Amino acid sequence: MPKHVAVVMDGNRRWARSQGLMHAAGYLAGVGALKAVVDLCSKWGIQILTVFAFSSDNWLRPKVEVDFLMKLLETVLKDEVAYMLRRYRVNFLAEHNLIIWTTCLGKIAFS
Image (cartoon, helix red, strand yellow):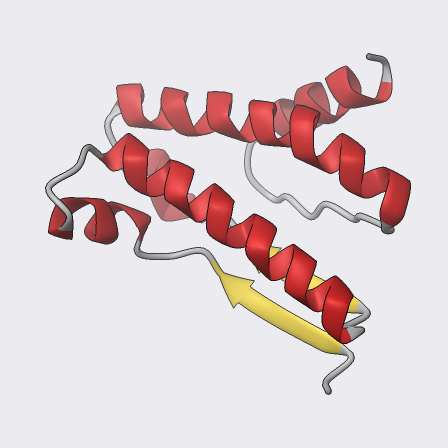
């Protein structure tokens, strides 16, 4: 089994479109898929999981979609990462709009 696995969360919008659903449904399905990957990595003894979840291209999407993604990110960070921090070491890497990441992480750290 590898020690490090990396995944790119891509295709959520395409999946939703293929199912006749709104983009938001695809992003929510992506969160569920990520949870499953985290659980499997833990079960299989994979020590490092790198997740590429938000590319610079995402900033070019319609504002309402970017706003949804940022709110989803905040919710996932607050609800899921807080749980993961009690079980795993979690590192965040961000290069664009670090203020959003810092704000989200601050809400977790101080809630």
